[in-house]
Image (cartoon, rainbow, N blue to C red; front, top):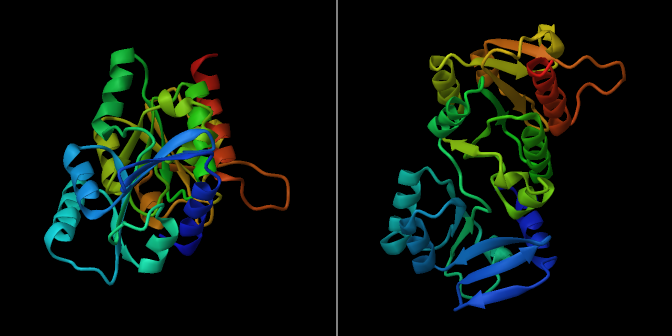
Length: 279
């Protein structure tokens, strides 16, 4: 997690309308009118992981002990595919809402995640041709929230995100989605390339949206089972993911700026798919 991410989280905490403590460890913070939860302390974090509750990330003090409960926490996080990282204790001090974090913090998800297999079943149960949006390296929570909002309006069956180096379902995402987080399933995968292979095995056509694409996006046949891949704000679709795509398409542009905001590009393509499927 970068310094900017730490400071963003810290600002969210400062802007909270209110905080209610449960013991000294669990604090529910009403950030931008959406409840987010930070779990503080070794035992509370361990029990949260044991309970099966959705967790976005675990942070541990770099100078803390690595055995005992901490070893259990990292082992369980690894088994559940939850990102964890050792960071400077001062970062934890800034993020914590109590003085009793014991070198361990966990960020609970603002909403439950789905499995990729769940998304495949959703379109089957609806009797509809699958349509998914996969985001590769998206870090801005407002962008993910905007994508969720458009996905709901365009009839997308689910969003696929990776569990490392990408924004998760935070309270900021929930707010930016304007409630769409409650209706659009989000699957979190540990390996996005393997996820693409799974989609292909289920006859889903994978279309990457890149400036180096071969055809304009509106020339793609979105009436077929499709997964739209959109890259992160800075680097776009990663090289490995780009190579896994069945085809690459681009958004035509007449101006001097070389690319669009990730959520805007995703919205254009999702609505083209909607248009083709409802004409």
